[in-house]
Image (cartoon, rainbow, N blue to C red; front, side):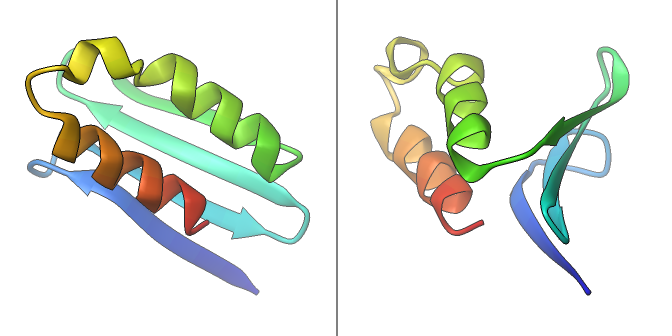
Length: 77
């Protein structure tokens, strides 16, 4: 059984979803800049490591609430 999580969604082109497919975690990132990109992880720590590198806290210094919301969404996976 698949469980789907929506991490963030700005519009129909800028969004990120995570699907738990058995022991695999598949992250799909859709952007109007580069289209769709998919990443497959074997563990939640690997997913969190990727998320921390993809969304560095320094980039959200003006909006730390948004960074916290995104990280909490990843932790719910």
